[in-house]
Amino acid sequence: MSDYRGVDYYGIEALLSEEQRMVRDAVRDWVEKEFVPMVSQHHRDGTFPLEVAKPLGEMGVFGATLTGYGCAGLDNVAYGLIMQELERGDSGLRSFASVQSGLVMYPIYTYGSEAQKEKWLPRLQSGEALGCFGLTEPDHGSDPGSMATRAVKKGNEYVLNGTKLWITNGSVAEVAVVWAKGDDGEIGGYLVERGTTGFSTLDIHGKFSMRASITSELAFADCKIPLENKLPNVKGLRGPLGCLSQARYGIAWGAIGAAMACYDWALRYSQQRIQFGKPIGSFQLVQQKLVWMITEITKAQLLCLRLGQLKDEGAARPQQISLAKRNNVQMALDSARMARDILGAAGIVDEHPIIRHMMNLETVNTYEGTHDIHTLIVGRDITGLDAFGM
Image 1 (cartoon, rainbow, N blue to C red):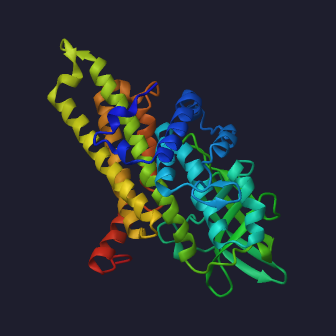
Image 2 (cartoon, rainbow, N blue to C red; image 1 turned 90 degrees about the vertical axis):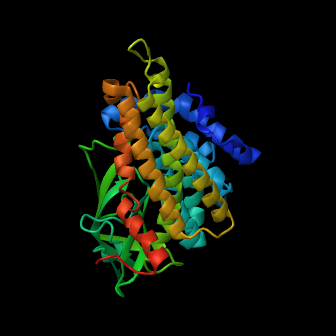
């Protein structure tokens, strides 16, 4: 069992409330006991253990910051700590919960009708039902405003046509929150239930990253849904972008968990691995790597703690979330690479978790806005000048 007291170099523990610590510890213990022992095999097999949905629901992980409908009503720091602990286990586990919470429950809660909320939120919160989020398309990733998927109103229904790609949980979701352009060219959100005629899914195989995660393609061919399945309280790109802010916030915290896991493992390895008659942790270059990692993890922890406080105050801006996502994921990826280097040849086998984290973080660095896209978001914010599309 890992001991993460050494990954709190600045005593951030003292800044957390009792509830925040209790929530974090409960998730940490569950991940360590129930998930970590099986994740390597799922990574090898390219599968995800769907049986974790119910325990996560019971712990209040899904939609943790929402109120009512069975949701826990936690603050944003507590939610962030949950994401940290889930990704300490695997990025696929955090993605599973992050999609359910930030990309499915959040838009239904924020943009949906009362009937939509009552139908879906209690089932999604408990893990009885799973959801997915359809925004990215084969030809439209970083530029979602150019999406080709269309929802045309015909009588008492909408007819959807198009394709979404790289969709977490796509083939196992009971409901898909799909973003499409309507007759007026405005982007809207539509709830498409599994089994709807014209709606099909296809899982993506051959992944070297996020192997313990279900990634799918969604296809809509004259897919007819009732008018009441459109999210009524949002119009335009601000709808999906609002969801992405929720997901990016969770990722910023989650990446810290992956970095913590890599650092902790590499530190222990360096204390036990003997070369030239002494532990490799006594060598200057190894210490340099470990010091870099603990420094950057500490900075990321403080960054996210403040961001969570701002979010609870209703003062967090999307650009601030972009800065945290950009910084923390790059930090985690660099930490994983350094940890892999410390382990030498042992670092490439899944007896150790580092190579799995390292490969997963290549995906985390890309989705929900690439490192470069977040650079341009922050760059536009600080200069007032738009570098997109130039």
